[in-house]
Each structure stands twice: as structure tokens, then as C-alpha cells.
Amino acid sequence: MALSPERDALEIRFPRVAGYRVELPAERLKATFGPNSGLTLTPDLVGPSTTQNLGIVGVGVDLTVQHLEDTRDNTIAFHLARNLLYRKYRDPGEDPKLHLFGQLKGIAQQWVREHLKCSGGTWKAQVMHQEVTDMACERIHAAISATLAGTKAVRVVLDPFNPSGSTRHFNFSTAKQTLWATQGPPPKSHVNWVVFDSDWEAEFCRVAEAHPRVLAYAKNHSLGFEVPYRMGGTQRQYRPDFIVRIDDKDGDDGHADPQNLVVEIKGFRGEDAVVKADTMATQWVPGVNALRTYGRWAFAEFRSAHDIEAGFARFVERQVEDAQDLAAARERLGEPALDFEAFRATLHDRGER
Image 1 (spheres, rainbow, N blue to C red):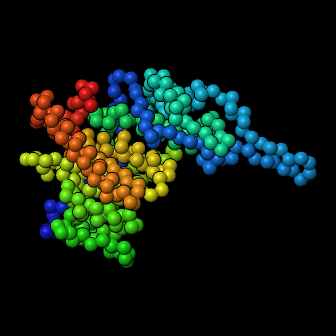
Image 2: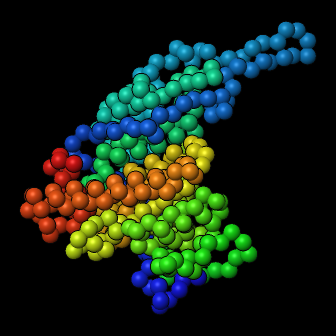
Image 3: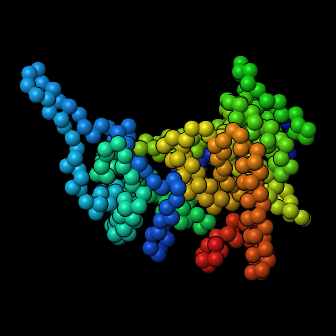
């Protein structure tokens, strides 16, 4: 349960996001493809490429999809661009923005050429199966959204009935024995116990409590913190592992505007994990930061149990360096009154960051 009033200063508030919307820029759409942009077609993903059809008598016949080899990349890009236009860049009840089709097709052509791979006897054209098309479009949409991070273009839609969550209301009973006591010293959690699901999560509790820049943290167990995302055309809810508040600034403004981190502890990283990470990086984080009512947020994913302590330290140090760079630039350009996110958007508009 949340301990009050002795730990009220450790309360963590978070937004309850119901969806996303993007206000497209007036200039041309661009895509920033990265490590998560690729998609490899395999028999597990698209089904077998060769099957044998055996009758009661006579010789069996091998059925293949080799004819798909003749499908041109341009045809595949056309199919992806059409799906992007109707599924990602069409407002509910509105006509599709047909002027975007040419831009989307060009981006889709680049993706097909550079980021669509095949293995196990599969063919590129098999990406046109609807479920796989949805996965491909999520990759391309995330790459386009990545170019808008730091601007006001990406917005989140909050739950109209319950827009905010907090550790203050955390109170439940459990029979689980995998518990971590958060007594410190000093205490760094508003909640008296962490219910951890793996030794990796227990290790992160130790790391968070020991790191000098961690101000507060909470395990997302029965906390109600969920991130909406789409997987293969299906709407799903993602529950990250931890929320951590860190002091990423030094001097007089230390602690004044702490950084909030959404932390995921991930061993095996399947297709689902890639989509979750992309959603956090290109939609949830920039959208919530644009609100400027829940503080500053970032996302971190740690994939090695033996590197959690060092990896977390490196990530926090990068956040500190980023805050210092922004503070120096803000002073240099004579705009100390702007908060960090407003100034970051200003730099983006100027093409300086």
C-alpha cells in the first residue's frame, strides 16, 4: 500500500492515455528508419511456402508460392501506402488525405527496398497478407512519427473519465511471496512493498534504490498504468514494469523538474516487444511531453540481467548530459524562461536539434 503522510513526497503521477493523434506538418512527410524498422518474413510469420497435396491414388503435387517472385517492389509499396493512407492517416468519419499518397508510397518504397527481408523460402509479396501488412505499416508509421518527436505534432488522447493515475491510490492484498521491501535507507518508493515477477525485477529494485539520482520509483503492479498500442491491426494494452523519477539536473534547479522514466525489463524480445518500444518512443513519450502537465518523460528498456546496473547508470548519465546541453543552449539563445520541452520544440522548429 502507499504510505502516507510519511512518504507523500515520493508520490508519482502519470497520465492515463486512451489513444494518439498526429497533427501532420505542412511540409513533406519524412521517415527516420532505425534498428526496429526492419521486418523479416519467415514461415512462422506468413505460413509455409511449400506444401504437398497427396490424393488417395496417384502422384502427389507440391504447391508453392514461387509465383509471388514476379510481384514487383513497386506493387508491394503501392499496397502498403494505400493501407497507411486509410488506416493511419485518415481521421474518423473523414475522407482519406489523398494528397499524402505519393509521399507515403515513396516512403514505403524505401522501406521495402531497405528494411523488408525474407528467410526460409518466403517472398516479399507475402507482406501483403493483411495481418503482416498491418505489422509493416506499424513499422513505417513509427518511422514517420519519429521525425515528429520533439515537436507538437504528436498528441495523446487522455481517458476522459479518469485522465490521471497516482501511487497515492495504490492499495491491494497479495498472496505472492516474491516481495521487495522498500524501506531504504532512505525510502525511495511511495509503496511499502514491490511485487516482483522475476529476479531481474528484484535486481532493478536494488539498482534503483542504490542510485543517487533516483528520487522515487514504483512497480507497475495493480497501479493501472497502461499504454495503448496496435499489434497486427489489433488494439492492445501494454503494462510497463516500472516508473522511476530521477534528478537529471544539477545546481539550483536540481529536483525542481525531475525526469520520469518508464522502464521495461525484457529478456526475450519478440515481435510484440518491438512494437511496444516503438509506440513508447514515437507516440506515448512525445505525446505526453507535449501536454506539459505531467512533467518530462522518457523510455528505457534493459535486456540483460547482468547489465542492469551499468545500463541504468549509462542511461541516467545520458539524461543528465541531455539536460545540461539543453540548459546551456537555452542560456546561449537567451530563452531561460522556456521549460525544457518547450525549448526542445523551439530547437526542433529551428532545425537545430
